[in-house]
Every structure is written in C-alpha cells, then in structure tokens.
Image (tube, rainbow over the protein chains, first blue to last red):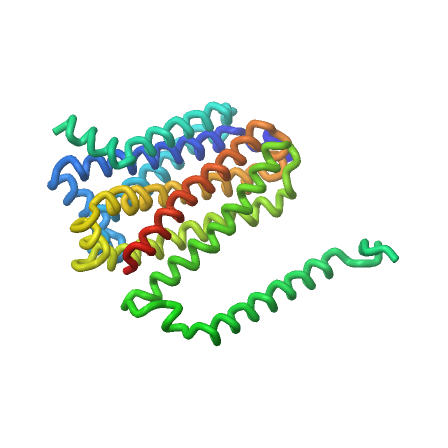
Length: 119
Length: 199
C-alpha cells in the first residue's frame, strides 16, 4: 500500500481543520468576553443541543462552535482535496501556526488585553 | 541454562500470560485499596463525588495513554517506528479516552459553576485561580480531542504507507507530542484546582 493509492490531500485537510477548529474556539471565547448579548447568544448555541448546557454556561456554545468549525472544515477540505496531492508539511505548518494563535488568544492576560482594546 | 525463550515458545501465548498477570495484579490492587480505604472515603462526601471520580480516573488513564503516545512519537521521530497496529490501536484508544474525559469534564463543570461551588469561592477569594487555572485549563483540554483524532485518522487512513514517508511520520509524531503537552497542562492545572477546592 503506498500513498499514491491514498493521496495526501485528506491528510492536509485533517491537519488544517484542527487549527481552524481551535482558532474558532478562541474567537468564540473572545466574542463571549466582549459583550453580554454575544455571551448569551453563544450560550444559546450550546443549549440548543448539549445536555446540561444550562449549567455549563457559554462554554457549551464555545465547544459547539469549535466542533462545527473543526468537523465542517474537515468535511469541506476533504471533499475538495480527496484526490489531490497536497503537501503534508504545509498542512502541518498551517496547523501549528493556527494552534499557536489559538493558544495565545486563549491565554487569559492576552484575552483581557484584547477585549479592553476592542471595547 | 539460557534465560531467553526458546524457539518453541509461542509469542501469542507469552502475550496472553502477560495480560493475565497484569489483570491479576490490577484486581489485587483494587482489592487492597477497597479494604484499606472505604469507597466513601476514597470518593469523598460531595454529592458529585462519583462524577468527579469518573473524570479523575479517565484523566489518569488518559495521562498514561498520551505518555505511551509520547514514547511512540520519539520512535517515529527517530525513524524506528513501532508496529503500525500498535500505533493504530493506541491512537484510537487515546482518541476515545479523550472524548470520554471531556464529556465527564462537562458533567463536573456543572457543580463547579453552581452557586456556592468552587467557581464562586475562587472569584471571591482568588479570581486569577479561576481565570488561569480553570478557564485556561478547560480550553487546553479541548485542544487534545482534535489532535488525538487527527493522529488516529492519519494512522488508520495511511497505515503502513505513513511509516514509509518521513513527512507523514514526523507530522504524526508532532501531533502525539502536542497532544501530550496540551493534556499535561490540563491535567496539571486540573489536579491543582482539585487540591485547592474540590466540587
């Protein structure tokens, strides 16, 4: 079995989707911190389907947004690239960069600083 | 007399014997713990003691799984990967454990946020503990799921071919390394919170 039989497009799609999902998580957290109506809207997204979401608060909505962004991006990119040869290294680098961005945005001092800047 | 198993020893038989010994030792450990520390003392007196214990046990088992993944990552980096079956099964188990730990974490988040719970206590006495220890930990824990699923997906989709390509091998190793790192952060901060104020 060789990767010629299995093009590398799906690998790149899976990798990039990880980064997109986690950046979506960070952005949803920033939005929730920015304004109460946004926080309530994000909470409502979680409450729409997740058991116990009322007790978890907006975290349920942030999880939902990240899940949809991750799996949605994966599905779309997979369908686009399933027969294509996309560089795995490029996919991995994009994933790493997005992972770094998401981690930085979620670090509480950075989140607070950004929220204060936008307000 | 040679200590090495002779050619007549069936490797599968050795494997099953080892599994049996491990299972017996596990049962023995549970029995000793059960008799020396009553269950209610082990779990604690909280109404959510069982949920907390399930989350803690899952996280503990996952810590072992991601550490095994870390050793596998080192072997992948070095170009001497373990067998593909070992990697595939390990990654699938880790991904499943990650999902279950997050679900159990969601359950235990409810009493944490409840009025009079640890969140209220931290916000009143040490808000930075909630912000940094808890919120950051909860997000870092979520990072583990897509990383674990992605590593498992690459291993199952490409199989042996992934071991022959350096880019795929290195990428899978990086995913396993990052998975270990993010879970370690979540695990460490989670343990610290539990020590400060359990649910």
